Amino acid sequence: MTKGRLEAFSDGVLAIIITIMVLELKPPHEDSVQAILSLWPKFLSYLLSFVNIAIYWNNHHHMFQATQKINGVVLWLNAHLLFWLSLIPFVTAWMGENYFSTIPTIFYGIVLLMSGIAYYFLAHSLQRLHGHTSTFSKALKNDRKGKLSVIMYAVAIPLSFVHPMIAFSMFVVVTLMWFVPDRRFENIK
Image 1 (cartoon, rainbow, N blue to C red):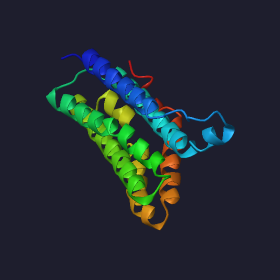
Image 2 (image 1 turned 120 degrees about the horizontal axis):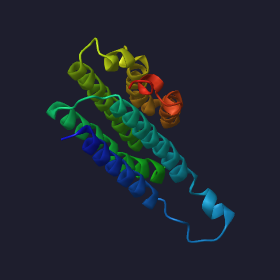
Image 3 (image 1 turned 180 degrees about the vertical axis):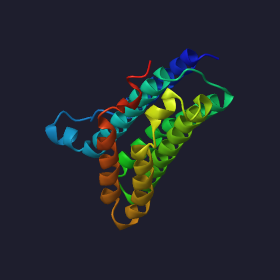
Image 4 (image 1 turned 135 degrees about the vertical axis):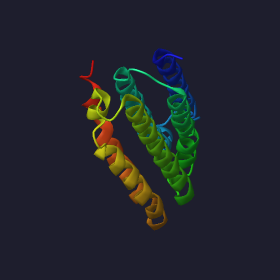
């Protein structure tokens, strides 16, 4: 399989994930401002998840533009990443429906944590495939932001027991860290 097919498949899955998420946003049955304002938890969780999916799509695109070759391990690790990302619509809807209560927020955090770990494994598998002295590996460097993200998710999950909005705030901080695209791979030819 070529990396182009892997990218096209991944793009399609991510587009479906976003579509599923927006379909979970049901319009209110009333035509009042109060009715639309009552949807704030659903919209806020959707917004955070949409931005996260967009960040993964953007960084996945840049990383695979820098990729010269793929193998079976990369295919499976990419599927592993897509699996965790495909759970985002479920935990997004659950968290929004339940006004950021503890258990849905914990599961949202677990899905974000596992997505971060999956992306880390995928990136480092590509690094091993290309060799530690390759241009790809030099661009990846030590991946501080990726490691910090996973640590912050891991810390946020138990903090959900203290107050779910503490965890949610940490999820927002990680998202903001990645909001500016990961430019490490942009200049590789």
